[in-house]
Amino acid sequence: MYYTTRSQTTMLGRLLSFALLMFTPVTGENITLEYQRYWAVTPSSDIKVPVQLGVMSRCPDALLCENVFDRVLEKVSERVDLSLIYIAKINASEPYFGVQCLHGPQECAGNVQQLCVAEYEPAIKWWQFIQCQNFQGRTMIGDPGTAMKCAKASGFDWESSDVGHCAGKDGSGRSIEGINLLKQSIAMAEHLHVEKSCTVLINGRKVCIHDGTWKQCEDGHTVNDFVRQINDEYERLNKKL
Image 1 (cartoon, one colour):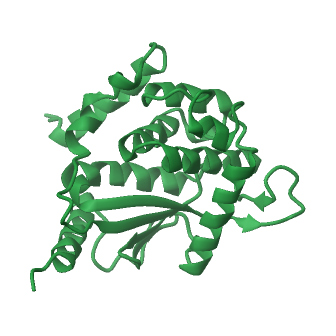
Image 2 (cartoon, rainbow, N blue to C red):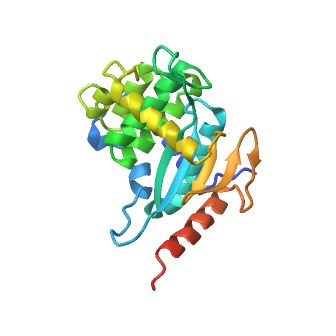
């Protein structure tokens, strides 16, 4: 007999929400309750644990990693400062972005779209935007129409918001501000010696890589393993002297 776990039920609920939202007019008040429930606010006196995922927006390993951390956030969102850093190469000869992305120019566009949402929208909307893009399938990430639909599904209007100015009101990602954000993110990845998508860093330390399979994960690679590592680091950072 097959039993559906709570985590599976939550995930199915979110996927259904995305499917409905993509075809339903929504406003900023319609952010799905699944995300509101677990994207909590930590007390201002506490130090959140920096968690970075080194990714390429259209990479299968990145989508898998982001799915895992969607479930991690269910348990420790109030203790985490999550961000994505993007892996690519600066190449002035590339005509659209001055950047060479492994999965093509549309991946560069997807990277810019996600960076601009992170720059101007609250974390809850940024993460929902990414999950919405991923739900459409990786070949649709970077597509302007998908970005605009996912913006609406995440509670903001692309064209009238600062996101649209940052990433191009046409959703192309070919804007000065967005491209500069991408180049800064690439520089950060290089500074941290992040070369594989997806690389997981907790408080600046590489703890795991997914590159076809999980690698170099001394402390484990399951949702509960990442939760435990984050909790341990949180306690260390907030240890009372």
